[in-house]
Length: 157
Image (cartoon, rainbow, N blue to C red; front, side, top):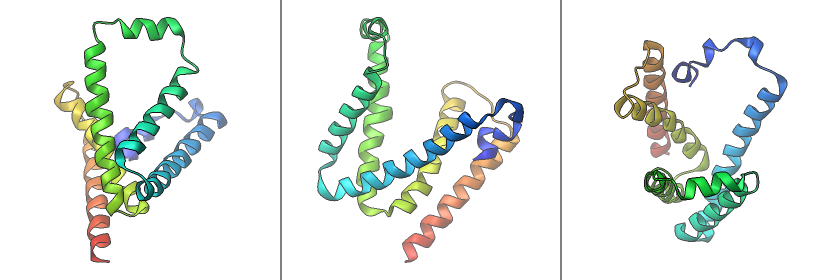
């Protein structure tokens, strides 16, 4: 992951305790997310889980938002693209993720989730015309090999 994101190039003087704390909290939140959704898929339908999650996200994002920004976004000519991005990028992938969690252990799901930066990087290359450095390509290969090996080992059990 470090090769793909080029975090090794970051200047250590820009890092502080608060940044480190938020990074650790992000990792803990991801773990909580995966285990919570694994539990939820045993007790509810993907549609209800997705609806509740969407409501929580709306409330979480609405509280710190400024009303003028919400109004500006809702009347923007880019609104159809935002909706398409939300439905395809968020909704569809989330539903597929929930179905996948029904058949996968949370530990394996968290490892497979490491493929997300790869898809984002490839999206940047294909759609936005970005270039990847050699170190980033090596990072992609390492992640793909690791995810594949863990998936194969998991299926043997």
